[in-house]
Structure formats: C-alpha cells, structure tokens
Length: 144
Ligand code: DQA
Image (tube, rainbow, N blue to C red; front, side):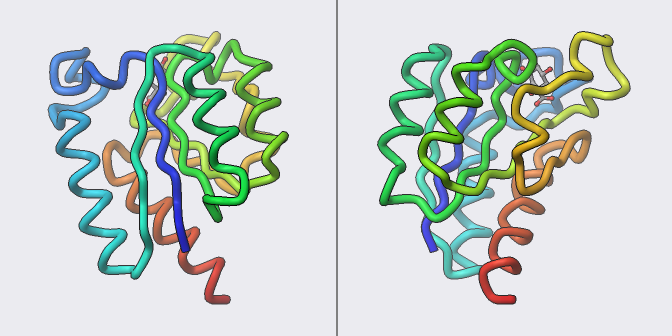
C-alpha cells in the first residue's frame, strides 16, 4: 500500500506557528513520525507540502495510478477550495482529512470544509497523532 501525505499552506511553519493551537512539533518531526509508523505497518509513504493551491492540485493529479490513499491536511484551503475538492475527486483516491486542531471549537468559518463530505474519515483535534490514526485507519481498511 502506498499513501501520499499532503500538507497544505502554512504547515511548513509548524513549530513556530501558533504553538498553543498547533503544537511544537515541526513538519520534519511529523514527517519522521509518519515514516516510522508507516514502516511498522508495512506502508510506503511520500510526504509533500506546498503553500500553493496549484502545486497541491498538480501533486494530487500525479497520484493517479500511484497512491492507494491520500492523507491530507489542507490547512486554510479546507474552508475555501472547490478546486482542491475537485482534484481529489478527479483521481478517485480515498482520502482522510486531518486537522491538528479541533476546527469545530474555533472560528465559525473553520466549521465548513469543502472536503469532509467526500472523505473516508475526518480527524480533527488529535494534534500530530491524527496522522498516525489516519495511517492506522487506512491500513485496517485495506486488510479488512
Ligand atoms: C488546520 C486548521 C485550519 O483551519 C487552518 O487554516 C490550518 C491548519 C489544522 O491542522 O488544524 O492551517 O488545518
């Protein structure tokens, strides 16, 4: 099983960015943790981060025929991007939407996601462990 892990805008700033909301781990720490967990599960992963919507869309398109599943934290694009939703649907790859923070306990504009209704699962508020739970869920689905 191969999983693409996508980090959207501003997630390169983790560790510096609002640590009270997003924690103190950097994106490199999170990617290392994902790689360790994935290898325990016998899953291969590729992590990708961009601050640019078009680059995220291009990366999603490249997953067609390559990735069995996608784990995506779309950052602020969660709440704005029809194009990101369309890209995910265009490749027909199941995806899990992850948010470090609990978006439902925050500003009302964060309560709507353009991705959630089509996601296999949504994990919000579990911090960096959300990515690990997503790996577990996708790996369990594959073997069940
Ligand atoms: C986020 C939540 C979004 O509302 C925000 O714009 C982010 C990060 C999260 O991981 O909690 O950039 O996706």
